[in-house]
Amino acid sequence: MSAIHRDVPGFPGRMETRVARIFDHLKPGAPLWRLNWSLYGDGDLHHPESQSGARRWDDRDAFEANAFIRVERQTLTKMPRSGDILFTIRVYADPVAGLRQHPRGRELAGGLRAQLLALDEAQLRYKNLLGDRDRAADALARLI
Image (tube, rainbow, N blue to C red; front, side, top):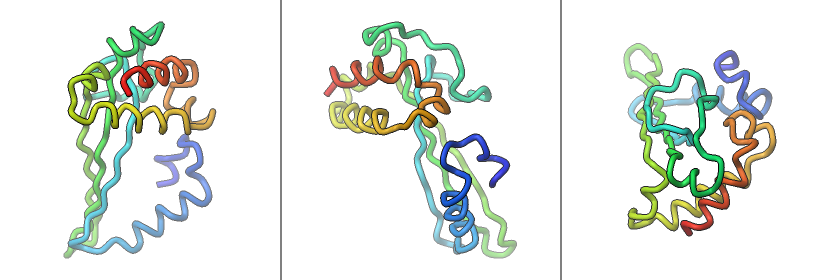
């Protein structure tokens, strides 16, 4: 786990210990899941280059028109006989503009904006949002 997550801000140390404890205590028949989000300039599901892909938003209107919210639903399931752990990822990519038509769009935009504004500099850099945070936050505020 350490090698896979070495570039994730805040992972080494306390978070690394917590994740190891989760893996050590995972029980068969009791899968765990978590969500992870990012913002991209396209709706492609496959992004091997991390969040460093090209962006097409120079202002808040361009952000709303061209940005995609990518959410990964990650699961951990311990196999009963082997004790192996199955890790799965289901990727969803939806246009930010779609929040206008979503029944809970205002709530979702507000939640995403709050999470975006709570990121520290290292996290923003990791998600390739350091230069885009304020523009994205402004666009999301207009959707609330």
